[in-house]
Image (tube, rainbow, N blue to C red):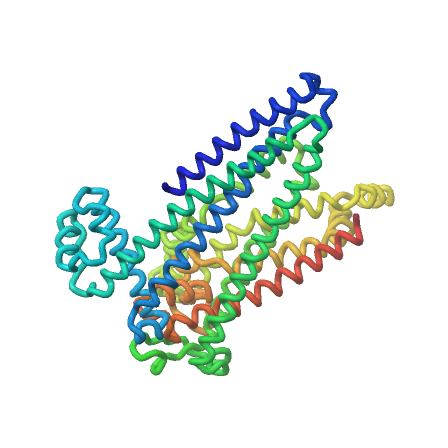
Length: 493
């Protein structure tokens, strides 16, 4: 039975459990709600949660664990040479799963019976003919071993799906039955439901934490694998980025400095645009704008935050780049010859700065509004004007929070990808000219993982080293920003 059907059955059972348990609770109290320990809805919720949560939890764990167990079991039948290489093993198992899916499709189209698809004695040529009849071509690279392992994988998957269906439904029925039998007027349903909800909230928080830990460890392990193949000193101190996918790193120069320079340079340009405009917008909205104007301008400004970054990238490529080229290029209005193409650090920086304006403006606006009104009143009482109050009282009081907002915007700029890919170009250089093409760490991570190189080569693994380095940089910026904001709140709240 498909997992979606199991999910729907469990949901229907939980809904039925809610109605039945609520009715049982009311019946045990003789129809008088005042005799119940908890509200009737708590009794129904307790039964519904008992039917749904354990069963759906088991279903989720099964969906994650079954493919892993099946792959581990079936891959043991691969030749030892393939098992020893992680990349070859992954490719071989992808072929096995593809053939297994083809067998399922052939059965669904009537080209093969379930018994024939599960029978390991059926010849490989017969399987090829049956699959070819429904438009599935295996190709000559799929050997007898792959076909046999595909049948094993399919049989193991079908057996696991059957066991999964039975166990999940049994757990749902058993849990519902236990909750239903406990339902009575003196049962502390509210306490049980609140405790269960607390456990669910803790589990949700743990999922987020464990996901973060998993991401960090995946970066660490692959980064260590990269540094075991490529010298760390050449990576961190190298000034040339020239990967070559021809020889497992033998002809590659993977210097990190041009990439981090492009990242920081473009981010500085973006902040030079976003910080003044965002801060001035926040000052106007919080101190000068009337309520009707603020209610219109602030949402319009924050619309910029909802635009996808790919749209900003296209805007940089099709509009901002040509405009800059027409002004600073060889044939431009100013005849300066600074710019030879539409893709440059200035192009990406300007558009990224526009994208960050609502980020800086919204955070700064909230921080300025949180400055106590008593400080404004005291300044006005001493005869200061509104502009003097903003310059000498409000901004100094809000400065730690504004600095934190700027640092958070900087970490957002450092992690941007699509605007850089479309607006800045792909050249890794250490130039000071903002009108030359540059690239960033995130752009090269994308390019290194989307090539045709082997996954265990230094040219591919370098993406994890780049990601780990960028993770440490942005984490440091975020920690610094949060520390500044927390110190600000302790001082002025």
